[in-house]
Length: 605
Image (cartoon, rainbow, N blue to C red; front, top):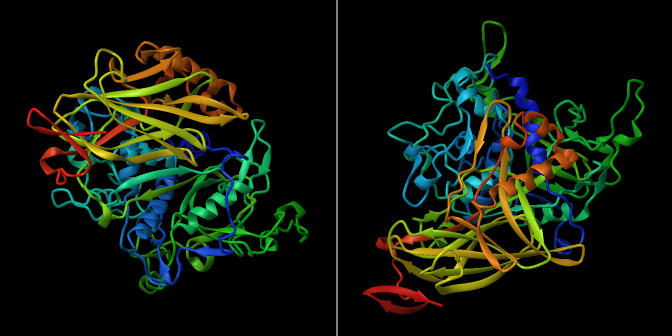
């Protein structure tokens, strides 16, 4: 049996492994225009926050945090707020969908044109062994909201629980049998929570078109020696995202510290504990008194260090359920005298049983803040998209390969059908990264920069994360035609311009097996004046990732779980994607400059 005790530890470890740090000079925020408080439940009279859910019986807080943050951002982007005080049920993203497909190897049945290539079959986390013992094992693995970001970036957007497949509702967070928990609260761990690993279920329709993730600096900066330092830029970054209608998923330490005061539902973790729970920030209040966090000892005296250095708190949406007036009115009592609620998300807790609490700005356990941005549906030119991509391992871990001399990375794709390339996407692993992109077609040999230059451009990204870029033109690619996306990425390190490349890595945990599928002719690295297929330097890249992990104090607990050592490590292709629209539905051939070639329209720079 896959023990639930494992899930608590693993949830914490995977969250902290993806923690971001404060870059003091790179991401300064202008806070002059920020109000002293914002609550997305009542933002200019509108509620952009969905009802509180209950994650029981699994360690899926990371998916609940990502779903809640995504829901608010999607609602705000699409003007789907309801009157403040009303429940906003305009969207209900499936945590079950995210949890399941992040943690399964790509199968042949999941191969689908424009999304998953047959060359990537076998990539991801092989959970055959734990699932043989316990089919619901993946829901106890824990994780990071950044893994959900990578699922979205791959074109597998958040799926609403109302989506049906063959008359069933498989994405509903309640297993398949809809059984209740043993105490009449929450859901049953013994229910069947599995989802099929095939394209029909994985390629579920979604209106939530993902644009970007932003991994923010944390207010709780921790040095390599794990000492705490308050990071004002982190605080301001989170407040700025809230002001833009983006809830922020964040990891904190909540289980076992006894820091959460249930008398007024406020938390201030005054030691740099590792995070073990994911929650969602939906607002903030600069004037929330620091005295509200005071804790008394057994003698009734206030513990001095339990009071933060200043006022201010985030408004936190948890995933431990809530009670509405309707829940209370419809409650019944079972034969053992226990209260049973009709709504499986009903559970007392939080301020006035709302499921919310206050978190001090100075809580020392805060890690890995991440927000999501979605396109406004009515502004989308195309709703059908093809994704050319090789990075399907869906890791939350990225390594840099830094250099003082010029380096570049590239992915080479062949069009799977006649299509028009109109977007690209990539991942940055440092704040304030500047990325120059070039797109070529009609490639020669193993040189991604050979052939015809279609377009080039430069973007600077304030935060690390996944970024989708609209191209200035729409470029026709004939089925089978090769093209490349070449990136030159730089950031400032110690007041020096540093060239960098980014690649995903991951390693085995317990009795799971990780596999990154990297084939010849897919990803290339440019260094010292020449291009190299990363197939030929993969072992060196794995060694670098492994050596980095064993040298970092925060990775020690994770490394202890990887019994295979370096043999348990693997890397994936560069996180560079081409996004196109099938030629059969391309509707605007007059956008940009044109040149004619063998009867087809080709857009030129």
